[in-house]
Amino acid sequence: MFVSTAYAQTAAPAGGSDMLVQFLPLILIFVVFYFLLIRPQQKKMKEHKAMLGNIRRGDRVVTGGGIIGTVTKVGADDELTVEIAENVRVRCVRSTVNLVLAKTEPAGKGGDGATPAAAEGEAKPAETPAAGGIGKLFGRK
Figure 1 (cartoon, helix red, strand yellow):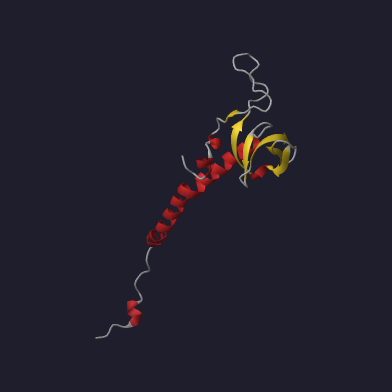
Figure 2 (cartoon, one colour):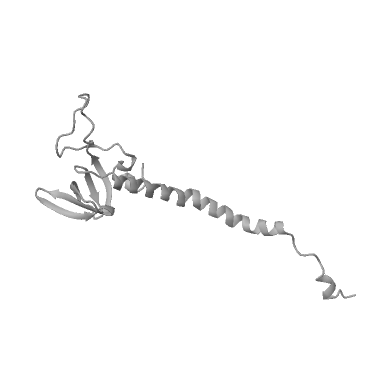
């Protein structure tokens, strides 16, 4: 009349496909996080690193503290000299630059006469995707 507990426990254990079904939601969550959060952040960091590597004398930059100035000297190491007012120059680390507002024209361009070369200290608007304005800094388009 009573079924023995030993007989009830002899059923075969669940197959490996049940294990996959249990972990499938976790795998899907990781894939979504990768494509929506991790990959765009890596791309943004790569663009920022390229922007920092292309900083030249005459570029108008915004530092991490919100100070806007013109780069007057690019050191061999990771150091910049930024002029924030007339005859007021500060040294800052290259990695503290958040945004390049305006880039100067490279020295080699403009020699053919088609486009005039930028005068000393004159900056032209940046054409890089990283310099899309302050809204781009916060992820707005």
